[in-house]
Image 1 (cartoon, protein in one colour):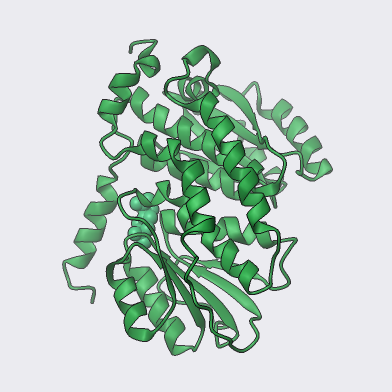
Image 2 (cartoon, helix red, strand yellow):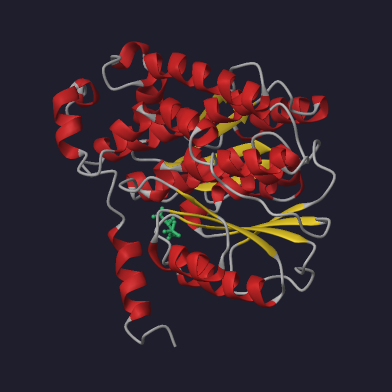
Length: 359
Ligand code: PA5
């Protein structure tokens, strides 16, 4: 492999058929539009009081729900649950605010959950580029937010997540969203100047980490309540962008099980590269746990890298880690000689499922 492959900027853009690099460069603007343009004309009728919030979606359309869940943990008076299934939990009813999220608008599990939510009388807001979900929402008089088309769902996280914050603010569940998104947008612009393909390897932390992960199995650890969703996001992005296996877990839970599994088989453990996500808001005892955990596993695995969140507010810090993982996974795809955009296996699976007409 050419040791300087990642600095061959023209080649990277040529190999990127779906514009993943462009989408990453545009993420700050995406977050801006997601806050100030997309939810603009949304009409939210009065309804019964809301006592729970559910986000239903899959894959790239569900991760925004997890971001919402963690964001709301210490700010919102009602629970937020993410549903990745055909069916909804029994508690969903007229006191539920349900976000039905599908980038394509055609994901069968999400359409099924949407129909159930209608039957249960839940208050629904849909987020989609169009497809069947938009048709149903129009037909049912359900408010929906039109997401710009042309991206891979996982490259539209700003579009799929930030409008849900705006809706919750409009309904009085949270406050201060605009200020936080403004800070997020500015911070992402700064980070972009350090992570973009034009920034050479010696000063680009995402390229450096991709080189460390190349040929290894990434295991990404986050912390409950701060970076837990980001760890999951890194795993998914490595799977979908680099087409490689990756695993994730969170502290403190992994201290009570996964940590024991670093003794055998030694030759496989040496293939692992552990990525530890750190956030200044991690519980002080979790910070201590990370230090001890690292000491315990360091000699067994191929390598350990810590990635620290930057930025002031919660959103900026969360997205600083997401941005770093997104760039790393795209660079990893190039190191494997692959195009980060297409996810042919998912497309194949959806076609195979649709062959019976959805019965
Ligand atoms: O990243 C992807 O392409 C997938 O994870 C999709 O998001 C997932 O299959 C659901 O599709 P959609 O986002 O169109 O509902």
